[in-house]
Image 1: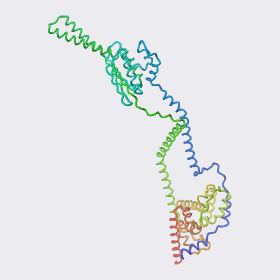
Image 2: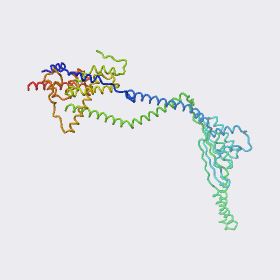
Image 3: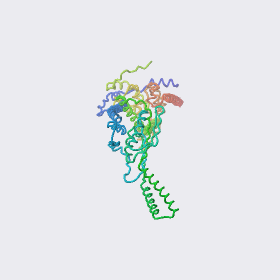
Image 4: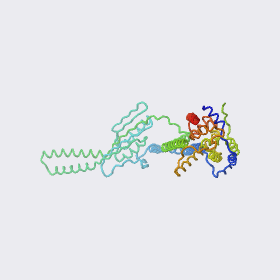
Amino acid sequence: MSQLELVQELRANRPVVSTELRERVLALAPPPPPRRIEPNLRRLVPAVAFAGLAAAVGVATVVGVVNSSHGGSVTSAKTSAPVHGAALQKRERARPRVHANPTAGLYADKTLRAVAPSSSRLQQYDASLRVRVKDQAELSRRTQQALRFTRRLGGYVVSAKYSAPGTSGTSRLALRVPIQHVQAAIAAFSAYGTLVSQRITLKDLQQKVDALGIRIRRLRARIAAGEPEAQLERDKALLRALTRSRQATTQRAQLASVALTMAVAAKQKHAATPPGRFHRTLDDAGSVLVREFELLLYALLVAGPLLLLGGAGILASRSLRRRADQKLLERA
Amino acid sequence: MPRLRRISVVKPNAQDFAEVAERHLDDVHAFLVYLTGDRSVAEDLTAETFARALERWRKFDPRRGSARTWLCQLARSTALDHFRSEERRRRREGRYTLGGTDAQDAAFGEGLSPELEAALSRLSAAEREVLALRIILDLDGDSAARVLGISTSACSTRLSRALQKLEQEVSAGVAA
């Protein structure tokens, strides 16, 4: 019997359903409606994903709008923050220029008081300031002003170096200012522009002067007591040297050294106009979306391997189940 | 002939199920007869298959396949549950089937020759089910493969081997 004949015979003699079975099947009653709504995963998963995406975009938009409404006030606060030097400069301009006391009013701002020299001990006071001015005209003006102010305080200029090539410029002044006016000088120089750096060094000279004074007194006493001629000449020479040293030390303590360096600020690019509210909103919303994406990526990186393992496990179990069913059918 | 695409899908209801049951009852029954090799078991399993189908009728999506294919899948699942429970019962009772059922009247079809009946009873359920799907129910290769949970090529291979074995069994029976 060929395979074709087998097929024909099989098709010609199909099993027939009994009447009892037909009635039994057609009499099946529909089940009662389910009490709870059974979720359709095929529709639920895309709906949840879409809702999640909409929520993420909504949150980002709200955060962007809220931040943008606050961002303007924050920005204006930053730009209007006063610079000490500039504020003092404005106050200084508002006062009458001629004062009997050149230092009058400069101590109004307590923050500008430099380290004060001691009034009871001799000290070597060295100060170094670096100030940035806005342009060459300002550099020239402030240089002249510093020289005049130093002289007005009773001090003098040790050296002055000024150069203004191109659009830049630097002014280096070595000044000596009476110790009692050094704080006023530092305060005034700090107000010439933006104070970039400031360094003050104090060195006590009192001990040295006191020690010199003691040696001088002993030497004078020795000379007054009478000495051989040779020794007397040597002691007088030593006395003169010690006296000169004490005078020089005392003089050094009476004048403070101030090194003032002023430089023209580097050309700044034209300040960009602050972004409008719409752009701030977009920026903030974009930042939030990026952050949300980072969190999602992190969650996927953490959960991804677990999901992969789970999926592999499910596929493996299905494959095993299929093989088991096949073996079962082969045995049946 | 090109496949017609449905523009809209109507949700299945009880009335539709009754029509589907009427239309495909014979196919499901025939499939289960060949799968189980026992008419009485096949009738019970047919009733159980349609009972399950009625419970799940709301979830049936005609876009994923025809109702006949879906019912055959359910029938196969029902039969596998039956075989598993039977195997567990036999293990508990300490008895194992020695193969083949007792001789009974025309298990697979009323007009089949005795040699063909005997040859069919000597095939395994796995071999008979592919014969039932492709030859008795005349399902195409894709639909039959979907019911069996295998690829189309694997289904064709199984069919070829089943027919070959049937031919050999019939020839052996005739020779005997």
